[in-house]
Image 1 (spheres, rainbow, N blue to C red):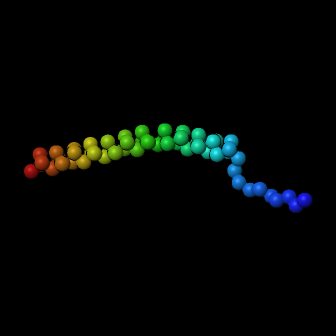
Image 2: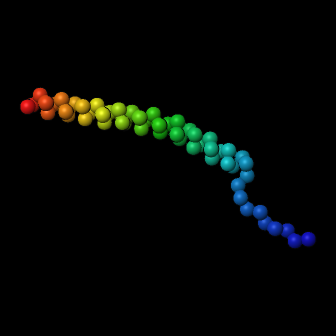
Image 3: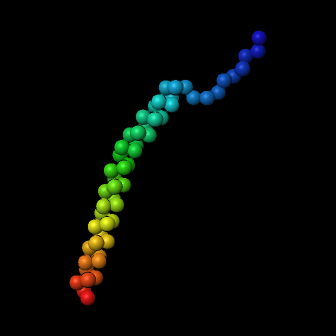
Length: 54
């Protein structure tokens, strides 16, 4: 009988990768949203400074 070599990922490997990606997303999303809020605040401050400067 001829044996074929199977290639691919096991279920546990896929689950581990999904968990790692979930942790990375949980860390990255709040930082990204905070960066956007800081950028918007900086833009607003620049507009106010320009208005006050005349």
